[in-house]
Image (tube, rainbow, N blue to C red; front, side, top):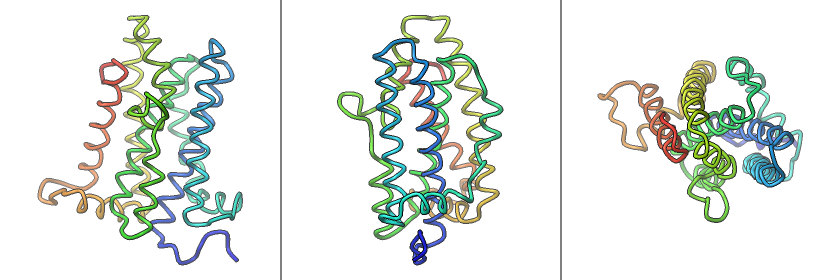
Length: 236
């Protein structure tokens, strides 16, 4: 039996693939930042965030290939292998706090992108996708979503250092610009994702007379980014 259910519609497989790929990237970034965190509490906090990202990734793969494990994950993510290389290259930093913010902004845009496209998936596939993609943070930080721990760390650092807060605000603008460029590139390179963008725009009430669906999507992702930066106390 193939690792991925062949009855799964191609757009659904593509969305699961990119969502799983970005969750795996989020896990890697949080885990790396946990290793060189400035104190044990921060290290533990980021490790918990990384663990949850990996759990979401496995849950996503299980939606279209229950019990198939590593081969299914590789098959789903294969079309997107290397998709983040240019983004990572253009947002490389040796600064620890900037590295954490890169993860929060990049992963946040990726999650918003996937959640938005999931609105264009009907039936049980769409329902199950949205259930997994909406898994938020735990405890009192749940409103901060998937990156609750990293957001909490950044809020603490920025609120204690105005110079750092200003630097992180500038860095966030650079990272979100690159993340939005990546979204556009993904749509250009993957017709299945482009078709889901049109379907999600219609499902979410976008009027085609108001402009292209890509412009609508970028505006929606930018608004979500601004709200995320507001929660951090940083200017978007």
